[in-house]
Image (cartoon, rainbow, N blue to C red):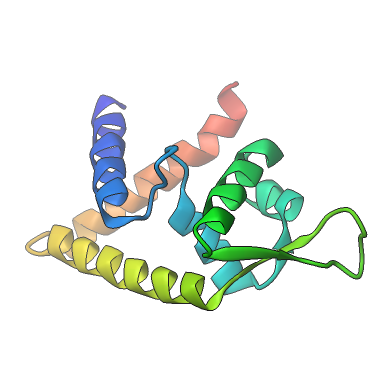
Length: 135
């Protein structure tokens, strides 16, 4: 578990350098990814899909809105819960950050055995599934 935690922290530091993690420590790229792949969504919808608190997503959304990367728009289905969507600047930033993340992933994967990587991914998925049952 310590290796996973230490790897997570190193990856998070790289993510911060590449703009995938906000100054406040939030997953700005992940939020933009949710919008890029799922279209306009409310903050509560994004929070439920992750799952994280609504307040966490609201803070990230507010940070990204202040940077002009996302915007809140009217929601015909709910007067008080606005929809969040990427702006053109947000789509550009998301694409650039995604490309850089792919470059980093490719570099990290060079020389690694594909079967071993698959086995490691399977192990991490199994651990993640068990976490919900341990608490």
